[in-house]
Each structure stands twice: as C-alpha cells, then as structure tokens.
Amino acid sequence: MQGQDGERDRHGARNGGDASPGAPGGAPDGASAGTAAGSPDRAPAETSAEAPATTPAGVPAGTPAEVPDAEPRRGRPRSAAAERAILDAVIALLEAGEPLAGLSIERIARTAGVGKATIYRRWSDKEELFVDVVRDMEPDDPPVSGTEGLADLRVMLESLRTRGLAQRSSALLHNIFAQMKSHPKLWNEYHGMVIAPRRLALLEAVRRAVAAGELRDDLDVELIDDLFVGPMLVRTVHRPDAPLPDDLADRIITALLQGLAPAGRV
Image (cartoon, rainbow, N blue to C red; front, top):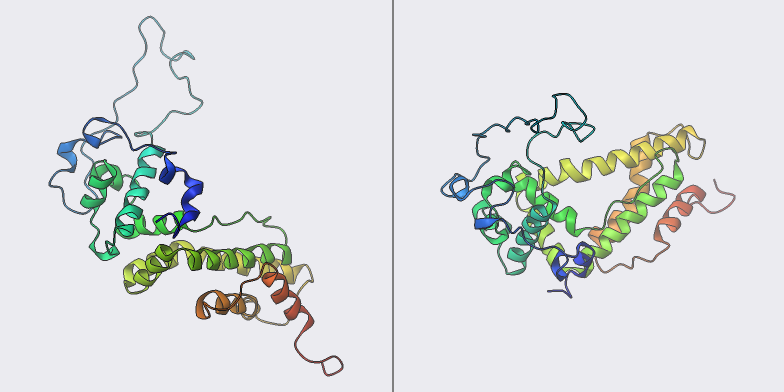
C-alpha cells in the first residue's frame, strides 16, 4: 500500500523507523494483561495511584539530588513508541480492508501489541483516536505568524490545497473521509477537533487583514472568509478532477482583491 499513501513515509514507522513497544506481554506503559483482558470497550477506571518518590539513602530530604528535574513528573510518562504503534495499527487494519465502524479498541490494542489501558490513557474513545489517525496521515498544518493578515491567509489557503492533493494521491485517506462522513459521531468529532479550529484561524487572519487596511472594513468578516475559502474548497472537495496548481492560492487572493468587474465598471 506504499504507493497509495506514501505521505506516511515522514513518520518512519511504516519503513522501520519506530518499533512496537517491547514490554513483556505487549503491554507497555504499565498496562498489564489483566488490565486489558475482558475490559469493556470504554475507558477503564484508574485503579492505582502513582507511587511516592523516595529519597536515596544517605541524602537529606530537600537536597537537589532528591529532585533532579525542574518540575516533578506526574503520572506515567507517555511513550512515543506506543503512540506510534497504536496509530500504525489502525492504519494497517484499514489497509487490510477493515471498516472504521468495525474496529474495536480490543482489536487495535492486539494489533499494536499494547494493552487497552495504554490506548485509553491517550484517547477517551475510538472517535478521538480515529481523528488523530486522520491528522497523522494528512500534511501538517503550516505555522503562521499570528500577526499578519493576508500573508497568514495565503499560508492557510495553500494548506487547504496541499491537503486536497494528499486526499487525491492516497486512496486510503480518501476512503477514510468517505467513511467518516457516514458516521455522524466521528465526523462531528473531526469537525470539532480539526475543521473548527482551522476555520477560526482563517477568520482571525481575515480580521487582522481588515484591521491592517488590507481588506474592506464594511463587509461581514465571515462573508469575506467564505469568499477566500470557498473557491479552494470547490476545487479540492467538490471538483476532484479540477487542477490544483502551485499558484492557486495566489490566484484566488489576487482575483478577489482586484474584483471581477471589468475596468471602468466598478
């Protein structure tokens, strides 16, 4: 399936970069076989407290040797290898033809070689996990200044274009989105965790552009935002056969700033 979703090469795990956790019994992060076996498909209750820190023999309490870190650690440390194994397990199951609706936390944990408690310490339910799987497969959101208007807007429009290209080049990612839209709870989770924050960031960029005098201040900012984002969404979502050239974001911005009426008729 490498040809279908080569974008995951950057994570390394699919090409041997990350190994599955090697804790005995396949349950890292303190998850035991007894914790995982037979537990319901929801977050298990915490049954043990973190052991208090001990002072080495011969070292007075309160000395620097007692607390080597600037801040005390709370709870178990999260394992990046375990997270990578869990995400890759979901992707592997989907590549094998398993539908999203048919995946259980127990099946994912068994495939990843971890305990169910290890998954629930990171994600409260399947929907939250699946959203992170999709985000993991998509191109990363680019950094923006947070102070510029049109410049940040252009960066975010370009991000929409590259995500559209990613969906076109990955049959798996395209299939996942199709399945998500047929499961309201999962789609609502993705909308709340991913789409809504991105839309808010775009609106804030429009507001900064208006405040800086780059855009008109007599129009509703949400309308302005729709005018910029709409053409890109039409190209990436509603017209999968439409070209997505490198300069598409610049062309959209230029067309809107110049207007569509012929010269002399404005």
